[in-house]
Picture (cartoon, rainbow, N blue to C red):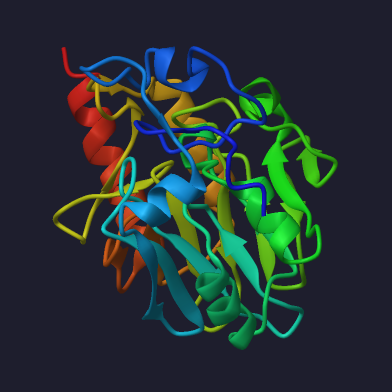
Length: 267
């Protein structure tokens, strides 16, 4: 793999060529590290001692992360289905051992990423598993840091990946912010931090910028709610290890949105 491509140390996104800046971090939803823009590579991360972390996160769902964590510390999820495994969200790290572990779990048939802060090394992962498609909403096209033919830009409110899996353009956090719904079992919502599972895991929240504490606009939250309303789901899988609403997930999202709107619209 081309391990020399630059990876931003703050957001963890891999770029297709060297550059002095990281536009994703310079956007008001993120930040440039306090010591200035810094870069690493896949080889550099391996030399620093980072390794893959693979652990079960729920029924038919396997977490894929890095130990110690890189960038903002998120983990991805391998959603296992009869139609093939879909990797939801992304991490920066990849090595031969991690590729082998994922292959033992059935490999990948597709990748889908919630928003630009989680793009990580998505093209590297796609190529490692036979150039599988990477689904990104077209509204976030400008943020793709390593353009590649594997990236599929879809438009509209929803996009069906398999009989059980549907992408939904919730539009929270980024205009192209997407979540993944599974209808299998009791249903599940894979939300990254588009719908953020908070420390009290009975609840979620909605933000335009997490590190800079900018709340999401009420009309955006209402649109997201209306798009999610037709979907049933017990679990909500957030973007970090064990950030999972375990039961009654759809109701948790509704009541959380009502609480959120009550605070931001209070007069």
